[in-house]
Length: 204
Image 1 (spheres, rainbow, N blue to C red):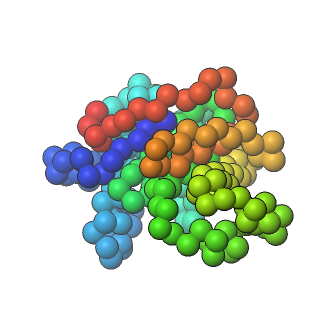
Image 2: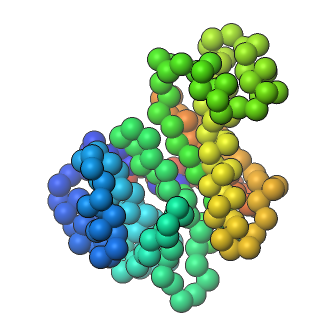
Image 3: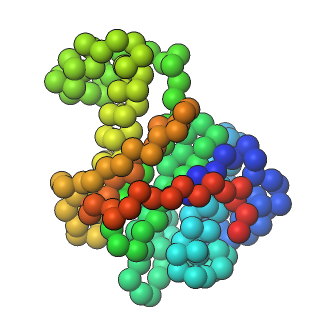
């Protein structure tokens, strides 16, 4: 799994990575109205190319991606395509890659100031919300992000797995959270080891 704080990514890396984008990706980049969202998108595509390049032993600039409406991009690859999942929150961008199993990744910046009760009431089913409501405030913060991120990661996994005719009902999920960042990685098949988190500045 690769993780980058977009605040430390320099203009040289951004300009170089922009040249890697396909014409379709550049159109999508231009469609974002907020500069922060453009930056997230660009860094996500740079990070994904770097991660896939390392996995496939190719230079990042040779990784070709095609956008898909309401789905993750598709890797243009003649062999058995690796699996991957992207996520972003705040200044953080992350991607996970695997040769063996479909993935679903979610990261969320942990924000104690959010109205967790209101969000939980909207996002959780009645049983989940009832259990959540019985927790004290300290435990609620951890429980909220654990369940929220797990739901998001499973949703992404289901989308990725369905696109390759896999069944993800037996999803295996790992909590890789850090102090201020919730990180959940789900996979169609149980991983043999806890994934290594590689911190990157979007340079190869």
